[in-house]
Image (cartoon, rainbow, N blue to C red; front, side):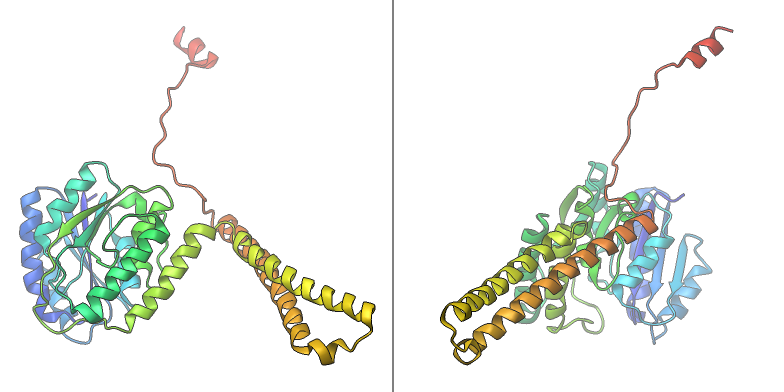
Length: 329
């Protein structure tokens, strides 16, 4: 088994592949540790795969995974993690914005006992309005939501202990939030300053529009971290509140109708509709919570998933009667 696995998702990075490979192998050779490099080609339309296929013929430590279509960065990373055989897995982008020379700094934190060493682009080169400011706001919100004090959730450049990734299922665009998801299972996370280099070729695959998707992802992470194993605590709370308000309004109107005999529909029609809607909404939310509990139970029981993660087990085996009898012969 390799000690290190380097996972690099790529999509149309033809000009960067050979320089990245040369710099990466130079760094890894100096570490003097067994390693493997896994490139995941996310259905590139340029010659990226052809270059990688040629490199595979000359380096037995190189593996190339080619996806059938463009699934996105999260899926590409997941494919690389599934193929990785190393005890420590390092992911980075293939556009040369991440310096392979920073890998030893990430490994140093892993060797200190941390489970995840996350890169921090201390001096970002992105445009302030479209990338820097939205990123800082999103990182601040994410740190508060997840209680993981990172200043840069978005970078792909991270080092992981392999066993930590087994507790994290990736989908959507959640790759940037792996530290938060892993921290849910008790992972220890450290932040390491890394260089943020200008792209040598082409432009970024992401624009300002991604900010809105990040907001949705933050809400998803907040819900998963807080209510994943107990969805009724979220939906039930708001369901009972809404149903209580609606029921109170309708009860008050019914009492007034019985007491005064007035036409409630003419006098308080909109309020009666509001009360009915609140009551129905409350019932729907409560039922959603029940369905969520059922789905959660089905997920964990059918797939054998655990709601906890064990860091280590230590025990001192006491001799049994059978051991004593055997040893006395």
